[in-house]
Image (cartoon, rainbow, N blue to C red):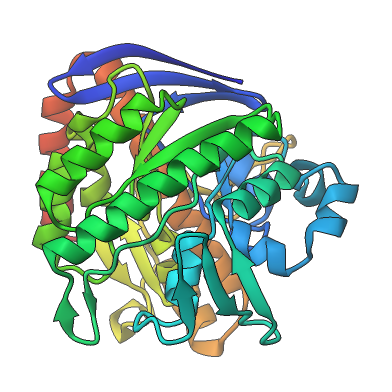
Length: 392
């Protein structure tokens, strides 16, 4: 079902190994986001080749389309999408918050659950902790997330108060218990993670973490960040919350973030990360490299023969050696600029391969640095390289 080994530490940073029903994951790890059962712009084969160990699916969207009858007929997401490594699914709570409007006008939250209109066809829907667990059981995801309320940083221009964040956090705790009870009733053979909430208030997050630890769930996540708060607030919570969680359980920071955020998160004790940033930014011509970020749409790249990153071994930058010894792939900045300017779909595909490879490889480097007792030096070099800039 789930087994987590803590193999090594460096300060708060952790090197671990997580065993799930569909495979073993070495941590710290970055998990590409596959909202509709696919990671946008990239073939599953490319995910395997770059070393992706686990991907995400979205409970809310998959419930909408293709629907549970189709997914049930395949025995879950793995066979449906042809991905046979581990999968994590979120609970649907964030989508209820984001798709039905941050102002809350098109959703109604009660103790029982959330009523809202389907963004697909306008149907009236009701999502509860029990329904979320039922959907995720059909999905057969290796890691199931509890149903929670995503506490906004502000509503209608007004910052969420301590009292409002407390009420939201306590509701999420009650939903966590209901999620656990339904998960157990369904005899789901996978692993359920709890989610720490509490807004930007450290005392509330401490209360949330302590109460969730009493449930003795297989793993825990830090939620409610990247919801509109200033970056310094996010970093403060990221530095504060992971250490509150049980040391012998995996720790997951939801929806974060830049390469710097991931490395700082590892240093704060986080084991697992996900974010749409590498795929979304790739589709908009924003590339991450060892030496800073590169905007491929800039005119200066029109005649540049160099790869995005000469140190990168991804298909986009370095190509792939075929059995006959020839090299396929390996593209210049000029070619990628041309594809973007022409609106060719190959452009965002190659950009996505590069960005995801960069994120996956970044966590591989972090694991190696932890294994070899050089994480502080590696982290310092990472920051210096990124600060140097692409053309430095």
